[in-house]
Image 1 (cartoon, helix red, strand yellow):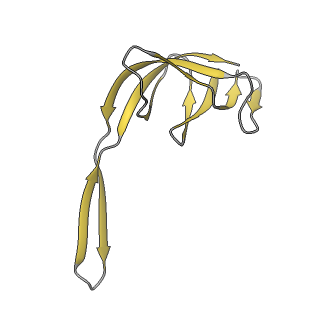
Image 2 (tube, one colour):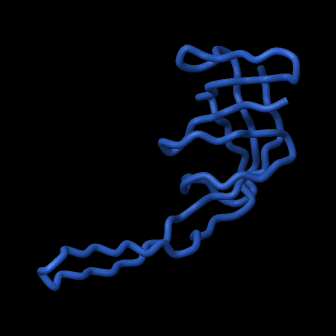
Length: 103
Protein backbone atom coordinates (compact mmCIF):
# COMPACT_ATOMS: atom_id res chain seq x y z
CA UNK A 1 0.00 0.00 0.00
CA UNK A 2 1.26 3.47 -0.85
CA UNK A 3 0.08 7.04 -1.25
CA UNK A 4 1.29 10.15 -3.05
CA UNK A 5 1.23 13.18 -0.77
CA UNK A 6 1.84 16.87 -1.41
CA UNK A 7 3.85 18.99 0.99
CA UNK A 8 6.10 21.99 0.51
CA UNK A 9 4.97 22.36 -3.11
CA UNK A 10 6.36 18.92 -4.02
CA UNK A 11 4.94 15.41 -4.30
CA UNK A 12 6.27 12.35 -2.47
CA UNK A 13 5.47 8.64 -2.54
CA UNK A 14 4.79 7.42 1.00
CA UNK A 15 4.83 3.76 2.04
CA UNK A 16 4.58 2.44 5.62
CA UNK A 17 8.04 1.87 7.10
CA UNK A 18 9.87 4.04 4.54
CA UNK A 19 11.79 7.24 5.25
CA UNK A 20 11.19 10.32 3.11
CA UNK A 21 12.88 13.73 3.10
CA UNK A 22 10.47 16.62 2.73
CA UNK A 23 11.16 20.38 2.83
CA UNK A 24 11.55 21.65 6.40
CA UNK A 25 8.51 21.30 8.64
CA UNK A 26 7.87 23.11 11.91
CA UNK A 27 7.90 20.01 14.15
CA UNK A 28 10.37 18.64 16.67
CA UNK A 29 12.14 15.29 16.32
CA UNK A 30 9.95 12.50 17.69
CA UNK A 31 6.72 14.40 17.01
CA UNK A 32 3.91 12.87 14.96
CA UNK A 33 2.86 14.61 11.74
CA UNK A 34 -0.21 14.07 9.57
CA UNK A 35 -0.52 14.82 5.87
CA UNK A 36 -4.12 15.32 4.69
CA UNK A 37 -3.32 16.42 1.13
CA UNK A 38 -3.26 12.91 -0.39
CA UNK A 39 -3.33 12.95 -4.20
CA UNK A 40 -3.38 9.20 -4.89
CA UNK A 41 -3.73 5.95 -2.93
CA UNK A 42 -3.16 2.34 -3.93
CA UNK A 43 -3.54 -0.96 -2.08
CA UNK A 44 -1.92 -3.09 -4.78
CA UNK A 45 -5.14 -3.89 -6.67
CA UNK A 46 -7.06 -0.63 -6.91
CA UNK A 47 -5.81 2.91 -7.43
CA UNK A 48 -7.80 5.90 -6.14
CA UNK A 49 -6.94 9.20 -7.80
CA UNK A 50 -8.23 12.36 -6.13
CA UNK A 51 -9.76 15.40 -7.77
CA UNK A 52 -7.53 17.11 -6.55
CA UNK A 53 -7.18 15.04 -3.34
CA UNK A 54 -8.62 11.78 -2.04
CA UNK A 55 -11.33 12.46 0.54
CA UNK A 56 -10.86 10.85 3.94
CA UNK A 57 -7.30 9.71 3.18
CA UNK A 58 -4.35 10.68 5.36
CA UNK A 59 -0.75 9.70 5.97
CA UNK A 60 0.80 9.74 9.44
CA UNK A 61 4.45 9.62 10.30
CA UNK A 62 7.07 10.54 12.86
CA UNK A 63 9.79 13.16 12.49
CA UNK A 64 13.18 11.43 12.66
CA UNK A 65 15.54 14.39 12.22
CA UNK A 66 16.16 17.76 10.63
CA UNK A 67 19.12 18.56 8.44
CA UNK A 68 20.49 20.29 5.39
CA UNK A 69 20.91 18.65 2.00
CA UNK A 70 24.10 18.63 -0.05
CA UNK A 71 25.24 21.84 -1.70
CA UNK A 72 23.83 22.83 -5.10
CA UNK A 73 26.01 25.18 -7.17
CA UNK A 74 24.26 28.05 -8.96
CA UNK A 75 26.51 29.48 -11.68
CA UNK A 76 25.48 32.47 -13.81
CA UNK A 77 27.39 33.76 -16.81
CA UNK A 78 26.89 36.20 -19.66
CA UNK A 79 28.89 35.64 -22.78
CA UNK A 80 31.38 38.27 -23.97
CA UNK A 81 30.71 40.48 -20.91
CA UNK A 82 33.06 38.98 -18.33
CA UNK A 83 30.14 38.46 -15.97
CA UNK A 84 30.36 35.36 -13.79
CA UNK A 85 28.63 34.70 -10.49
CA UNK A 86 28.90 31.52 -8.42
CA UNK A 87 26.61 30.80 -5.48
CA UNK A 88 25.99 27.74 -3.32
CA UNK A 89 22.73 26.73 -1.68
CA UNK A 90 21.85 24.06 0.89
CA UNK A 91 18.15 23.29 1.25
CA UNK A 92 16.84 22.34 4.68
CA UNK A 93 14.90 19.07 5.05
CA UNK A 94 12.92 17.07 7.57
CA UNK A 95 13.26 13.28 7.49
CA UNK A 96 10.03 11.45 8.28
CA UNK A 97 9.35 7.76 8.91
CA UNK A 98 5.93 6.86 7.50
CA UNK A 99 3.86 4.87 10.01
CA UNK A 100 0.44 4.51 8.44
CA UNK A 101 -1.50 5.19 5.24
CA UNK A 102 -5.26 5.55 5.85
CA UNK A 103 -7.69 5.36 2.94
